[in-house]
Structures are given as C-alpha cells and as structure tokens.
Image 1 (cartoon, rainbow, N blue to C red):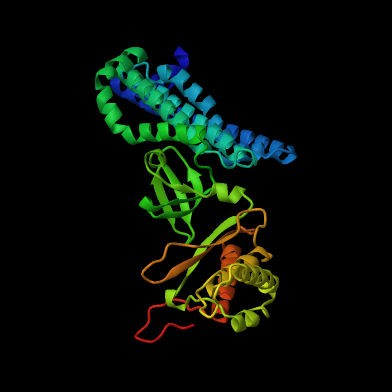
Image 2: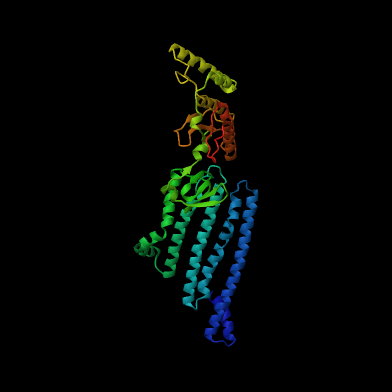
Length: 414
C-alpha cells in the first residue's frame, strides 16, 4: 500500500518538484484514477445486475421483478460496491492531507446513508406498486404508510449525517435536539396531523381509493384517486383535481357514497310541485274517463264501489260533492304514479318505493317520488330518473292538475 501510495509521488520528486507540489499532484492523480476506476466498476456492476434482473423478470411469472427494475432497485444496489471501495482507498490517497481525508471520509459515509435511503425508497415503492396490482390492496392508503416510514427514515438519516459531520455520537445528538422539540413539532405540524389522520382513516375505513366522496368545503365531488400522508386527491366529475388535507377527513364533515355503491340501487328523490288551486274532488263522469287509464282501472273500480257503499250506508247527501267520502284528482294521480314507478323496469323492487306529499309551500304542493334505480352508474341513473319524470310531467294534465311554474303574467301550463 505504501508503494502504491507513493508511486506517483516518487516520480514527481524525481522530476525535481518540491515535496509539497509532489504530494498535491500525487493526491490529484490518485483521486482521478480512483474516480475512473469507480465509474467503470459502477457501470459494469450496474449492467450485470440490471441485465440479470431483466432476464429473471422475463422468465418469472410474477410482476414483482419487473416492478423492481422499473423502480431502479438494481441500479441503486450497484452503487454499494464502488462506495465500499472508495471508503477503503480514501485513507491511502489522502494520507498526506489529514484534514481532507477526514472531510472526504465523512462525505462518503453521508453518501452511504443517502444511498441506503434511496435503496429503501426504491424497495418500498416497488412493494407499493406491486400491492396496488392486487385487488385486495387497490383501495388501501398504502402511500400513507410508505410516506410515514420514509419520513422516519429520512429523519434518522438526517440525524445520523449531522452526527457524522459534527463528530458527536448519534444518541447524544438526538438528546441535544430534545430542547428544540417544540420547534420541530411546529415545523412538522401538518405531517404529524396527516400521520394521525392517515391511521384513523385506515383503521376506521373512512375512505378508500376509488370511493366517490362529496366534500363541499373544498369543492370536491368525485372519485378518490390517491391517499397519502399529507393530502387526498379527488378527481371531480369535470375531470379537475381537488386536493384535500388528509386531516380534514377527520376534522370536517364529508359524504362518502360507498354505501350507495354497495347497495342494491341508487336513490331517486325528486318532487313535482302542483298548483294547490288545481286540486279537486272527482265527479262520476271524470272517474269514468280516468277508468280508461289502464294502470288505475281496477283501483278506481274498487274504490268507487267502496266509497259509494259507505256513502249509501250513512245516507250521505251527494247533491253537494264535498259531502261524504270522495276521490280527489291528486289522490288518484298519486296512486297512478305509485303504480307506474312500481312497474318501471329500471327501479329496484326490493327497496323502498313511495310517492308522497310534502309540506305545502308558497309555490304549491310538492308530490315526491322516492325510489331506487337498479343501475347505479351516473349516466344511466340520470337517464332513468329523467324517464320517470318525463312521464310524470306529461301525465299531470290527464288528471286536471297543473304544475307550478314562474312565468311573466301568464297562467301556469296544465
């Protein structure tokens, strides 16, 4: 080693250079030579490892090998051997310059820490990408766990690097930072909140990747595409991306539509407002006319017989229509809509189907349809709901009812 170290030095001395100049030139030549050798070794090892992994990945049935190559795990591992060689030869090259030897040796050790973190990140990203190919883990917030681990790893790496540079032991360095813990907590406030939120979101299964959520405070209405330590990304239905702080999921209220997606249908809850002045009792000629409506023919026959029998038993004076029991156009229309919705092919018959009156408003009397479409896909759901209300709006006039609408002094359309 001693001969190798001074082989160039002796040559420069023989040329008549001073001792100091010979030492500097010796160090420079050896440094350049070492860099060239390290570059060649790194290149060869990297080529061998990458080609070996590629060849193995081609023959392997699992996609894990391909993902390892994609995340540059072999390339990062290839840097280990050149680094070990550099650390071994640094004391030899810089033996005449102790201060440079100390600085460069520390720098190599710090680079070793960074390289270790690179390898860890590559491996973890590989695990993350692989798990996302499995149906069991596709909707899990794996990114959050990876980020939490890497934050701790980078913090430890940062502390270790400072300890190496300063010459203080790692544990003594960490203990010294205890006094500055309040500042550290303040700086990493969002990270700490995100970490706690990620754990709670995962444990309580509040949100999964692929869930449709509505978060009015942040203007989010769409599918969750990413959950990480600090943020949750939502792709809205207009294809814009909304970023929500992870801790907002546990501090604010939002709506998750997963329950609807997992149920047997998607709820339809919409009303049509009828003019109160158009509601009336039905006389016999009108009832006979409405009996031609197939969906309510049997209903009208049964109800008319029942009502007439009841009025006769009580000797009701029917010269005035309001006396006794009567059918109303609103009640018959409500029965018609109920029957129509129950028979609609796109409505889930195993879930609630209801046509009901809501409280009267200044505009009129709302008649609400409450049911569930069998098809939960958005575009199909909207089509089904529109199809039902197309029919409802067109059927209103057959029952002598009128739909309320604001207009410019004209009468509401019947």
